[in-house]
Length: 200
Image (cartoon, rainbow, N blue to C red; front, side, top):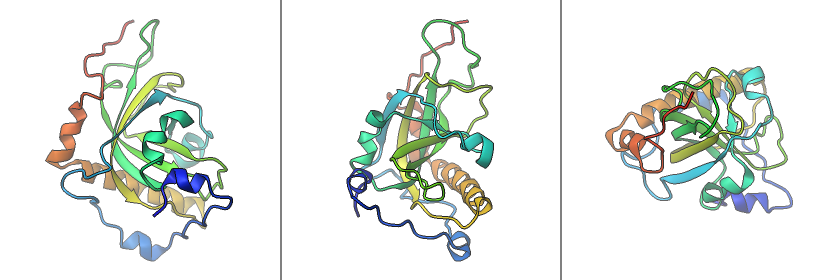
């Protein structure tokens, strides 16, 4: 199976499979082995960029995008699709922030790596949805992520409602899959800044 980086080099990308009701009904609620296996864990980090602006408005799933140079660690070893793991948003070292102590903790996340076939994106993107309610946008803040497993391939959809339904399933699958001892320990991985405090 070609990696995301290899697919990005193709003149014509292969069409994503079409989502079907049968696929949704057959989806497992827990994915991956009981312990992350290579190429996981994959470490990502970089400043949060403004994305396509569709996550919050259209899908009820706000996402934080990492810059292109920050996603090579995963695009060079993994295929396009939906992934799960943990992420942390770091407050600026100077100035004030609307984030509270709970906001800067390490939280579960779901990540889309690919082109979002429903919207026909032209460029490869890593869009991370952190499973936590934030008070405001955090563009420009640094984010760290640890990708621990693969959920499913990218799919094309006949309706936005079907896409939203699958996103909700992705969130549940991510939480269920992370709720295993050899995954939960990664919340305290040295990749994250577990000592940061907010300066107000």
